Amino acid sequence: MRALWLVVLAAGVAGAQVPERSTGALARAAVARANAKNAVRFDATFQKYSKRYFGVGFDWRLFKAQAMAESNLDTAAVSWVGARGLMQLMPSTYSRIQSVKPEFGNIDDPEWNIAAGIMHNRHLWKLWSATVPEEDRPNFMFGSYNAGEGNIARASKAAEARALEPTRWSSIEQVAPDVPRWRYRETLGYVRKIESNYSKLRAP
Image (cartoon, rainbow, N blue to C red; front, side, top):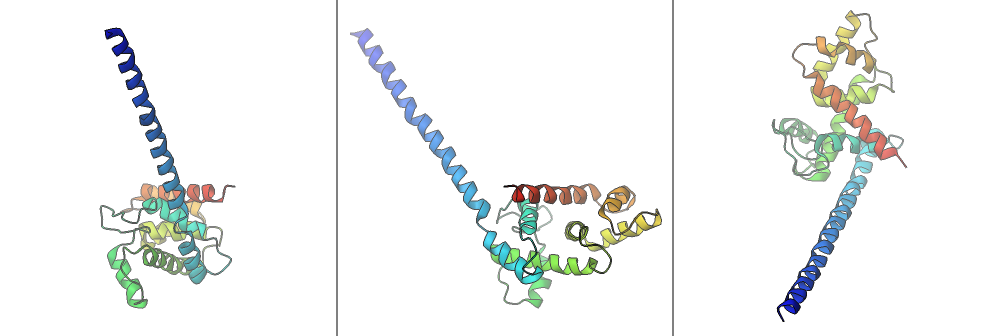
C-alpha cells in the first residue's frame, strides 16, 4: 500500500509541474506580446509630429530611434537630472516650448512629450541648416539635443582650429576629448545608439 501511495504521490507532483511550466511559457508569451505592442504603440504620434515639424519626406523613425535611446520608450522615465518622459525633456525646456505652444499639456503625457521633443529637434535642425550638410545634420541635431548646442559649437570651432572640417560629425568625434567641460563620451555614445536603433527600425 505504501509503495502504491508513493507512486500516486510522485505522479501528483509530476502532474503539478506541467501547469507551472505552462504558466511560465504563457507569461513569457504575454511579455513578448506586450513588448511587441509597446514597440509600435507610439508610431502614429511620431509620424504625426515628424510630418508637422519636418515635412512629409522626413523619416519619423529617426525620432523613435532617439526616444529608444533616451528612455527605452518608457513613458514614466525620469533621469537623475530630472529629464522626463519618452523624449527625456527637462522641465525648463518643456516650459519654454509650452510658452510658444500653450496647447501642449502635461510633460508626462506621451503625445505632448513626443511633440515637444520633435519640435525642439526642429529648432536644432534649423540652427545647423546654414552650415552643416544634410547628411551630417541629424548627428549635429541629436548631439545638440544631448549636450546643448553650445558644446557642439565649441567642438566645431575646435575642429576648425585643427584644420578639420568643422561641419562634419567625424571631425567632432576627433576633437571631442579636447573640448573642456563637455561629457563627450555620453554624447558620442548617444548619437551612435540612435544610429544603431535607426538601423534596426529600418531592417526588414
